[in-house]
Length: 483
Image (cartoon, rainbow, N blue to C red; front, side):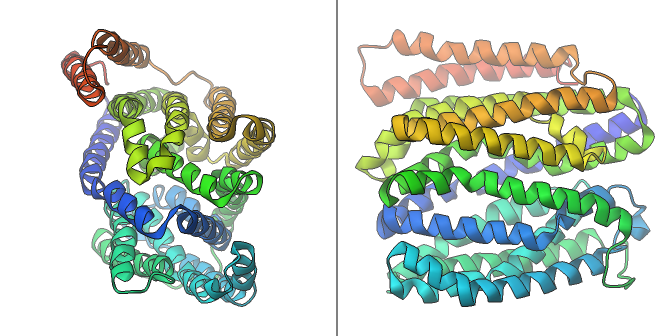
C-alpha cells in the first residue's frame, strides 16, 4: 500500500468510526420523534414537514453551491491557506440568506398559512424563516471542515445535535403550553444551536490557518465549480422533497404525514451512505490532482465495502421491525410499513453503486452532477404521477427508489468515462455476495419459526442474522477483503 493510499485508508476508517459513534448519539432521535408526532398529530407534522422542505430548498438557493465548492476547494489547499477565500464565501451567502429570509417572512408565510388552512400559523412560519441565516452559515462551516476530511461537525452537530435539539425542544415547548408555535420555536432553536456548535468546531480544526480578507467575491475557479453545483443542489433539494410535494397534492395531510414517517425510517439506511459522501468527495478531489487511478480504485472500493457492511444490519432490522416501528407513530401509520420495505431495498442498491457520483464531483465534473439530478427529477416525477394515484404510499416509495437507481446507473458509466477505468476491485463483489447471503438467513429462520409469536419471531430472526453477519465480517476483515 502506497503512502497516499495508506493516508486515505486512515482517514476513511477514522470517518467510519466517528460515523459509528454518531449513530449511538442519534438513537434517541426516533424515540423523541415518535413522541412529538403523537403529541402534535399527523396533520401538524405533515404541514411542518412541508414548511421545513421549503426552507431547506431556500437554503440551497442561498448557498450558491459554495458549500460543495468549499468541500472541493479546501481539500486542495495547503494547511496554512485553508481559510483562503472562506471569508468572501461567508459574506456572500449570509447576505443572500438574510434577504431571502425577509422575503419568505413577508410574502411566503401568509401563502403557507393560507395553504394549510390555519390563518394563525403566519407567526409560526415567520419564526421558521428566521432560521434560514444560521442554517446557511452552519452548512458552509461544516463543509469547510469536511474539506479537511474531518467528519466530527457533520456527525455530531448537523446529524446529531441539530435533530435532537429539534425534537427535544419541540417536546419542551409543547408541555410549556406553546403547542401552536412549538414546531417553529424548536426549528429556530435547533438552527441557532447548530450554528454556534459549528463555529466552535471550526475554530478548533482550522487553528493552523488565519483569516484573510480578499474581497467579497470568491475566486473565479471556485465560483465556476460552485455555481454549476448550485444548480445541481437546487435541483437535488427539489428532488429530495418532490415526493412530499406530489404526495401532498395527490392525497391528504394525514397520508402525507404517514409518508413523511415512512421516509424518516427509510432514510436511516440512506444516511449511512450519505454520511460518507463529504469525506470521500474530499479524498477523490485530492486524488484527482495526482491522477492516480490505482489509488482511486483502492479508496473507492474500500469506501463501497464499508457502506455495504454498515447498511446491511440496519436494512435487516428495518425489514423485520418496520410494522412495529410504524405502529409506534400511531395505529394508522402501520399501513406505511410495506413502503418502508420498498424504499429500504432501493437504498441498499444506492449504497452499492451510488458512490460513483462522488468521483464525478471530486474530479470537478459538476456539469455531469447537474445532468444526473435532472434525469432523476424527470424520472421520479413521471413515476409519481403514474404510481401514486394507483398504489398510494407504495407507489411513492417505488417511484423514488427507481428514480435514484436510474441516476446511479448514469453515474456508474460516467465515472468510467471520466477516469478511464472501472473503479470496483474484486473484493467489492466478494463483500456484496457475502452480505446477500447473510440477509438470506432471515427468511430461512423466519419460515422455520412459524409457530411462535410475532415479536419473538422477529427478534430471533434478527439475532440469527447478526451472529452470521458478525462472524462473516470478522473473517472478511482478517483476510483483508475490505482493502
